[in-house]
Structures are given as structure tokens and as C-alpha cells.
Image (cartoon, rainbow, N blue to C red; front, side, top):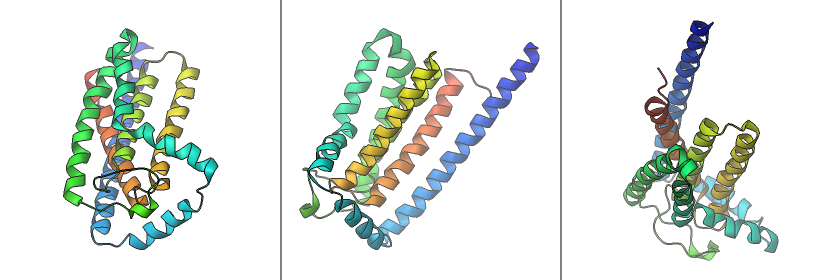
Length: 221
């Protein structure tokens, strides 16, 4: 019985490794294709049309939701959330420290990419908030998906209360999606910036989660 259980776990870990490797490879390929088309201006019409549609949703009610929501992807907010998880002894090593280390690496990556693509942001006439720097890829979308996604991954690994883990996963998933949408809504990013940020965030999340499984949980490939 124990041998069968170990075999089942090994098969599960192999399947998990294969799935996450495939997802990261797909996301990276999609990002490269998207980045090329953005650099060639092939996505301009798509960006204008979808941005215009999202801008048409603006009113006092939606502004009261998505303008504050966009700040939940700010580095200061994410760092504060990770800081709290690092201070609490129960979550320090299981969630806080892994999120802090890996989040720092993705921050450096997206800053490097922004400077190299140097895509201007949408015209300031569309901005609902002040935002400087370049546009592609969206750092809020990338860091939001990676950091909050890493929290989902680690919560599901460490939380014994599965119902609580499911609820937190849904809440964080909605948070991630809303951050990406809000960056277009407030007029500081094009849709392809957000898509690119999500794709890169997914690549980092899949690869880092594999590393954590290998090092911390000793999963076998």
C-alpha cells in the first residue's frame, strides 16, 4: 500500500512538472510573439479599439472601484503584503520569504524589459492617475500575477483548511484580474501591455513554483 502511495505521488509530481513546464513554455513563446508585434506596431489598431471600449465603461461608480484597485498592484502595496507575511512567524518561511525573494527578481526583470522596449504610454489625455515611465510590459500586471499568484501557490501548499485555501485563491485570482483591467481602465497601459505582463508573470510563476517544489517540498521529477 505504501509503495503504491509513493508511486502515485511520484506520478502526480511528474505530471505537475510537465504541466507547469508546458505552461511556462507556451507563455514565453506567446510573449515573444506579442513583443515582436508590439515593436512593429502591428497591435496598434487592436489596442485602440479595446482601450476605447474599456474607456466607454468609465463613470463615477466604475471609477470609484478601479482607480483604487489599480494601486493594489503598486510595488509598495505588494511589498507591504509580503512584509506582513514575513513578520508573522507562522507564514514567515512558508510564504513570506519565498515571495520576497522571488518577487525581487521579477521586479528587476520587468524594469529591464521596460527600458529596452521603451514603449510610450497612452496619451495623457486618457490618464485618470499620474504615471511616468514606459508602457510595455505592464509591471503592475506582471508583478501582481506573480506575487499574488505565488501567494495562491504557497497558501494551497501550506494551508490545512482547504475551504479557506479555496476562498483565498478565488479572492487573490479576482484581485490579479482586476489589477490588469484597471491598468487599461485608468488609461496608463494598452491592453497588449497587460497581456504581456500577465504572460511574463505566468512564466516566472510556473518556473519559480517548480523550483520551490524541488527545493522545499522535495518533489521528484
